[in-house]
Every structure is written in structure tokens, then in C-alpha cells.
Image (cartoon, rainbow, N blue to C red; front, side, top):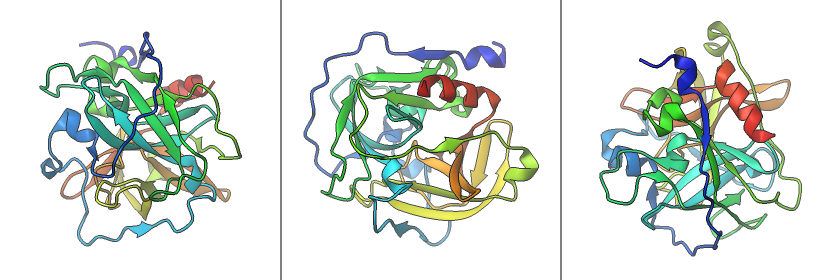
Length: 266
């Protein structure tokens, strides 16, 4: 077995293609299904009743720092996901948003071809416009091993968006601290095309590399920030990626994840 640190080795796609803005409709499927199969497998779930609420104003922070992703895979299939700004040019997201594993479809696995990033999207409203990226980051734990504990990555834009979008802080917190936290997940679910929805509840449990919560999510929110409010500011504690019938979860920002995100934002 490889040492845990080896699985956190950063990797990036080395052969970026020329970006060409794609036209998408609103009938696209969660990128998680590319690696994990249909949504009815419980990849992301409503826990009990659906308590999600729509973001009314996506132009204010932190809503504008959460982006709708329109993803083109290597086989030209199209998908959706979510990401969040950690610098003017870098967005954190799930590893499976940038690198598809074990799809079983010839020509689909590997780094995606292109991602169109739309900050603060609200249906047809794109208050900051859209930019294409072909530069992505993840770690070998995901790209080589498909380790769900290490399912995180980043999107690097060729240039920043105009205007003050803002960025999320992120941090490392103790188990005891996280177990007291009211957390929020906000993103772009596939059942509410092109619109941003959120839900907040207390963290239910933590593991060495995961944060668990019964916050309602739906496919398409893969890659969304899981954040707490600290000193009146949103601070991310995990990258939302998975769900089930009793709990949803995200990749915990531990010391190594924190170091990689910090390097990628630079």
C-alpha cells in the first residue's frame, strides 16, 4: 500500500487544448454519474424532506463566488457540476469534476476536455459572464486510485473575471470543533437547472478525511463548498462530493488538502 502522503501528490493535465466556448442546454446530468453511475445509487441525496432554498440574489458574496460548471468530457459528453473561487483565477471542486474514473465508456475516462465556469449563475442570468478553462488539478489518490477520500481538485482560469467576485477562505479545524459547526452547502443541483440552492444544518460526524452532514443535496452540487461562518466570513471546511440515504459528505480540508489548495490558488 502506498503511504498516505503519496496519494496526495498533486497532478495536472499537461496538454491543455484550445478553449472553445460550448453551447449547452439545461438538460444535462450530474458529472458524478460519469464516474459512479446513475443518481439512484445514492451519490447525493435529500435526507428526509427537501429543505433546500433557492438563492434569490446570486450577485452578492458569497453566492457570486460559487460557480455553475458546464463540463465537456473527453468523449464530448456534457455534464454539470459546481465549484468555488479560492483565488481570482482558481476554483476548488471535486476531483471527479475534472477527472473521470471508471466510467466504462470508451474514450471518456481521464481529464475532462473543457469546463465553462459561470459565477453566480441564475438561470439565463450570467452576471459576470462565462469563461472556459482547460487547465485542471487533482491528486494521484483520485486520478490513479479513485480514492473517494481524496476526491478533490481545482480549475485554473486563463485570466480572472472582471469585477469583484470574491474568494472563499478555507481552513483546518479539529474534530471537536467541526462537530459543533452549523455548515452550509450551496450549489447547482440538476433538478433545478441553472439555479443556485442551499441548505444548512449541523455537521453530524467527522472522519480523518471526511465531513458528514444531513444537509440536502442533489447531483450537480458535486464540488460545492461546505462552509461555516467564522468571524462573519464564510470559511470552507470540506469539498462536497458524496451522499447516501442517511448522510451526505465532503472531502475534509485537512493539513494536506489545505496545502494543495493553497499551492493551486497561487
